[in-house]
Amino acid sequence: MEIKLIDTLFSIVLPFMFPFRMLLRLYSFCILLVDIAWVFVNAIYAVMQAGYELIRPPPLKSVRLETALVIGSGRGVGREIAIQLAELGAIVLCVDINKVFNEKTVECIKKRGGSATSYTCDITKKQNVQTLAAQVKKDLGFVSMLFYCCGIPSPRSLLTRPPQNIHDTLDLTLTSYFWLIDQFIPDMKAKNHGHIIALTSVAGLSYIKDQMPLSVAQFAVQGLAESLMEDLRMNKVNGVHVTLTHIYPFIVGDDSPDVKLRIPSYFGTITPREAASSILDSVRRNYPEASVPKHLLCLGHLLRILPRKATVLIRDLLDTAKCVYHSCLVLSFRPCIVLVRDRSSASFYGCVSQKKL
Image (tube, rainbow, N blue to C red):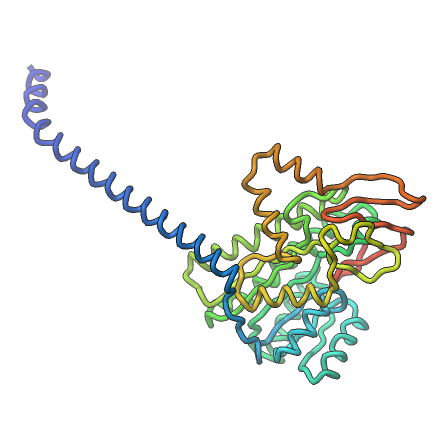
């Protein structure tokens, strides 16, 4: 009896529910089509805009009177970034563990009429970073630009450096970056103004042979920068920008007599000053990602979308190979071949920690 009653009720109700369900599904399908069309149109617009910006790049923003904290300003690319920022009118705060090199950078800036202050700090210690941040805020207040130039190896150091300590590598390249962001980005968010610049080596795009800790750390820095971009986007903080710059160490010469390029015309080489100029150009245009040299960024994007076998073939073409050449050690690294005449020690470009990694 109960079953018959239920069947009777269903036979009465279902004819009325069926059109309603169909209309609900049709409505949901139409909304989905509108969303897909909206995404498609905006994606095409973004591609066209990117193509247009290749021809006519965005205007350069002024960094005059911006307070720029440059971590790793003692030498290499970090030093050149600090000098050029001062030439553009920024107030530069130079931070490095090597007091002598750092003060030379500040002295060079002041001789050219710029404004700079020196801070000596080993940023691999959290307490040191907290003390540095407190001192900087006390001395100059709001820091609007943060350049993190640590962990970018020189060509010679990649070839001659002994096996790395995993903890030291991660502390220098990644963990200290977290601590710095934690100290300075809250003020940037509150003022909706600021710029964070992370420099990574080619290891952030592809593995470098026998440099696993470095490669892992550089991949992690790339992920950190992209996560930071998403955090700012989700919180609708559109006045704070993040720029991730990949530096190809074998493209940036370190003026060392021990390292010579066997095929300098393969991709060409540039000086640290030219590299710093390229980085600042990308920063002043608010690019989210760039590379030194600029045209090699396309190679990194290509490796992400191609099938695994295709990327392996490209990496094998540009990656590590060893051979003996005129009684010298020849190592082919991306993207050119380097000739090493001895195994003297080398340091990181603009690195604030001189511990053996």
